[in-house]
Image (cartoon, rainbow, N blue to C red; front, side, top):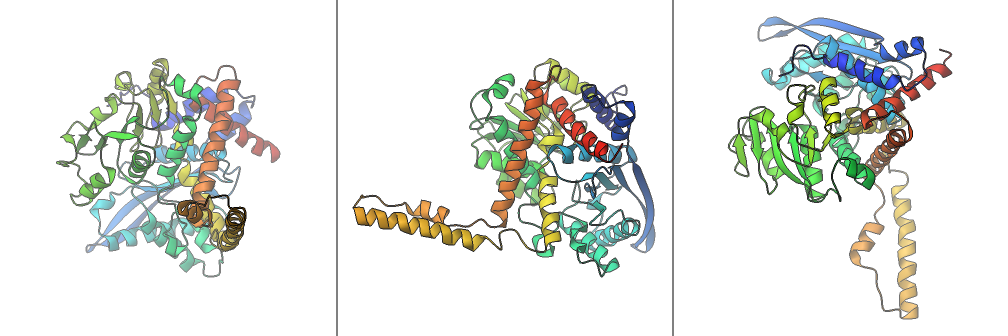
Length: 477
């Protein structure tokens, strides 16, 4: 449990900001302007449910408008409060700057456990919450663009987009008011997997640098690495699946609310998710591994890579010294407190920080926003032209082989892959991979090239704050 003397999530973000800001010549005025949250709107609204009026409390926080629109998810959880939303909005500012998406930072939340309501009730609640935000321009394609977060998904985003378009019937760009929508409602291929896919690309880029891998007391690539995943929601499931199926890693433990499942030979992630779906979200008695009720103990298991993919503050001063993973990648926002971060660094643990690691979601949200504004899906104009050009090359190679009796032919597998033009999903993955590589290289340059930068988190903050500062200065501040 987090000790009472440990900084809150909001305070942790501020402390990490100040630690990095010391390496930038901002001046006290500009530093404070970047750090503080611009505004937070609190709404309390009523919805008639089950024969009575229930009152709900929601928040939408805008941290920085150095670029507009501002961007950030909406989460549904009983733990939502103003400090948490403001901390998450600040992280969004730095995250967007790091991966160079042209957004400021925002965040929203509703104090609700979505499991307590059926689909129709959730739609009523979501639409009313959206109504309260839309009428104050806190949802708007040019000003504030939400996305899914913990407890929300494509369904909720579709409801919000529809509510916006009902209230703004002449806004031709109305679908761009929110991202993370289902593809048939203006969404984009690859958005659901985006955060998990971004985490995979982040790890792939990390393991391309032997010097960085050695700092984590590891060697080689991802193949065979033992991984512990805490939280098998959307993000945890996708990163676990991609790393195990595509990169040869072994998911040796998964922790959830009711306990953890371990298997030294590696868990079948799809089978585990299917088991959860058929057992009301429980991993208890999963036949493909050994179950234990000690969920929090999963964080302390020996492994090569630890992926906390659930809530903030799960690694704190109380358990940091018992963490055995030499490499941690933060899939959740703020899973490591400021105090724990200091302990882990002293232990030699390498941390790939949240504002970089889980930026896949906002990156693909950016692609969706651009798609909605351009009113055309990616790949529609060029895909068949690419295929025709590739076919000309293949046919010419085959003709040369026949004419000169070279005795070789192109393999069918090569021909099939080479002749396939890039569809929307391929282009989204390509853009995300490029974004994660470029952002890591920017962090790495600061990590190795700036005196006093001790870790990737500080490097990420330095890059992000520096970019935000340049934007403010260009505005005359």
